[in-house]
Amino acid sequence: MTAYRYEVFTSDIERHIAAGTYKPGHKLPSVRVLKEKYKTSISTIQNGYEYLMIKGLVESVPKSGYYVSRQPFPAGHIKAVSRPPAVRDAVFRHRLQQTTGEGKPHSTAAFHAAAPGDLLMPQKLLLRTMQQVIRESGAALLRYYPPDGSPLLKEHIVKRAAGYNTLMQPENMLITDGALQALYIALAAVCMPGDVIAVESPCVFSVLEVISMLRLRVVEIPCSSDGFDIDFLKKSCIHAPVKAIVVTPNFHNPTGLLMTTAQKKQLLTVAQYHNIPLIENDIYGDLHFGAERPENILSMDDSGLVMTCASWSKSLAPGIRVGWLYAGKFFSRAEQLKFSLGSSVAPVYQETVAKLLQSRQYDRHVRAFRLQLARNAFMTINLLTTSFPAGIRYTTPQGGYGLWVQLPARTDISRFYVQCDKIGVQFTPGASFSYGNDYQRFFRIVFADKYTARRKQALRLAGQNLR
Ligand SMILES: Cc1ncc(COP(=O)(O)O)c(C=O)c1O
Image (cartoon, rainbow, N blue to C red):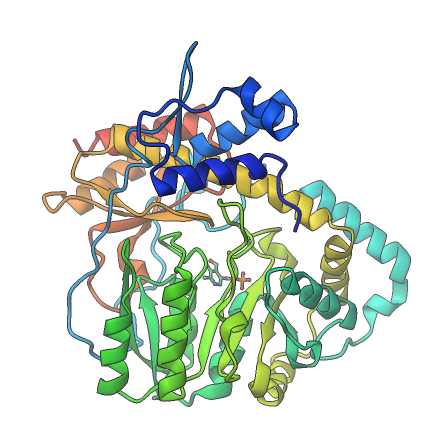
């Protein structure tokens, strides 16, 4: 994937800040100096500085210039919940997905739906490409396709993944009806009802629903601002016969956090030591705020235990219903399962995605989209820190769509949600992200829509009501 022009100089500045060469409050080189040094335009340097401001690393002082942030991206830091490793039945006490303001058809500010807002979705590009595909392929799109998917689409997925060091053989890949179906197939390929699996906690309710439907049992592995708790996983694997591990290492939902390379390797080592299939969900991997697309655990594996799934529901549009599963050595079982779930995904959608990948229009869209998401993340944190009570905690997302907020202990949660309802703000309450009771004081904010003045004001009011 080609980098933004400014990434040449922004990555140098980021390195200097990380190494401590540029300290908090340090004045950074002027736009003119950088323009000469990197032989580029003023607007490229300004865009680069804007990007560093979005990341919270740099501040702009009017009429003076750019400085290293004194308070780099305020970290609200959420600690892991503390409880012993225990197996839970994957059963929900109430209806699984709860949203504040449910039943209200038109809320002022929806921060609950993990889907690109209408204004950020590449509607024209998708509809135009779909029409082009229909014109070019005609009746061929109306026949059964191979159950494992369009060969052309698989070829493009494999080619693209090679660009971030993930090597896959197309014959071990299935095209699926979204990432959730891929996850369902991966789990069903290696587990039987009643088996125990490990899953990160909090975890998005749709994934929990799949686990529930497969009648599995779970150990929920705490995931916090410090990352995924590997020691907890190690203890769990001794305590229970874990048959699969399910994780979203790149911009986990709901926290938006990225597992470090070291954590990914440790996780893989645990899976390999116990011979446990590891299912990684990479649905948000393309939506990175940093310069580099993060790697997959699959790229580090030589055991064949890793299965990777993803889709274009988050980076293009959820209605496209195209995802994939790299099933590796579990392919033949996975293919059988896919066949039983309704043969192939609609050919027109598969070929539309193939065309977007082939023409690089997908890459162009994603570059603009992830910059917008990074801006939205920055705005959300700004609004949280300026309008919510001082005791709130939150994760600082490194990509993806959302962040995870913990309210102070004294908060009257029911009253908070009643107030949200009155203002017309919708969040997803924390209780939806676990089979247990750990997240009553948490909620998820999704920032995948444009920040209008109305949306900003609604979020401010939700916070001010808590003060
Ligand atoms: C981690 C994760 N996996 C899967 C999905 C659903 O993906 P799809 O619509 O492609 O089935 C979501 C959507 O919220 C998600 O956050």
